[in-house]
Image (cartoon, rainbow, N blue to C red; front, side, top):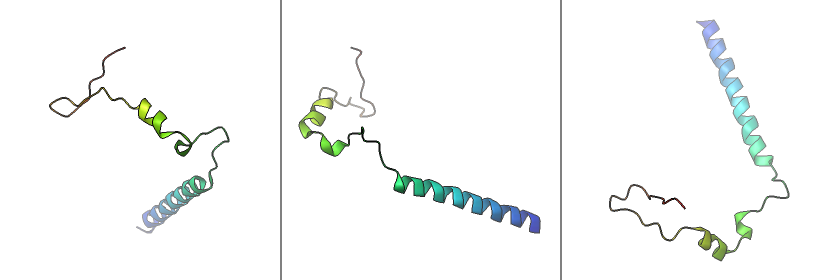
Length: 68
């Protein structure tokens, strides 16, 4: 019983350490200089990129796309 308890504690600590490292990497990550954020784009360009011709079908489940 003590061996299983020790293994589970070690596994918990290992998982906690990995999650902490991943969280820390997300906090200190810096995007490369070539990345353009959405805040720098014009609103008109975003609105033009969104489809305005696709209406929901009567069942409201999917929006069918026509090829072309």
